[in-house]
Amino acid sequence: MIRKKVVRKAHAMRGELYRSLVLEAAEQEFAAHGFADARVQRVADSVGLSVGTLYNLFESKEGLYEELHKKRATALMEQLVASLNTDAPVQERLANTVRTLTAFAAEHPDYLRMVFQRGNAWSNQSSHSPVLEQRFFQRGVELASALCQLAISRGEMVEDEPRRIVLTLMAVLQAQMASWLDSGLNEDADAVSARIISLFSRMYAI
Image (cartoon, rainbow, N blue to C red):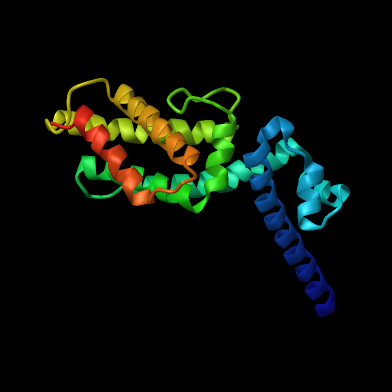
């Protein structure tokens, strides 16, 4: 009985290891080729698995893409929510979300490339984006909009519609991140976030 449990546990651990390796390889594949031109065969080859074995782990290319977004977007959203839900001044909390995002991008550059491959405007989340990503986008916008409303009510931010402020920040973020990516991420993440924060402050801070 004990031996059977050990064998089952070892099998499960091996499966999780393969899933992790496949997701890592898939991230590189989607980043390099985009979803349409990505090939499951290349992903399988890069981790030494047959395509059949890979499909035992992920039922389709779409499922692999969704799982990868789930893994990265969940981790990013947890960090962003933590940066917003503090007792720091409102503008410092918003600045911390920028620092969190740039740090995450520096740590996971292939995920950033993968997101840009779709060509969606961050300020207007496409219906073609993964459902989980759309939900996270809406949640993030709602949280940040509430903070902007608070800052406006305290006279700490130029008066404007809070959601529009947040979507403007998203557009600035996308433009700066795209430029950073095009440069090969050869600039320090702190410098990138400082520039974005400075731009945002000049637009909306009082």
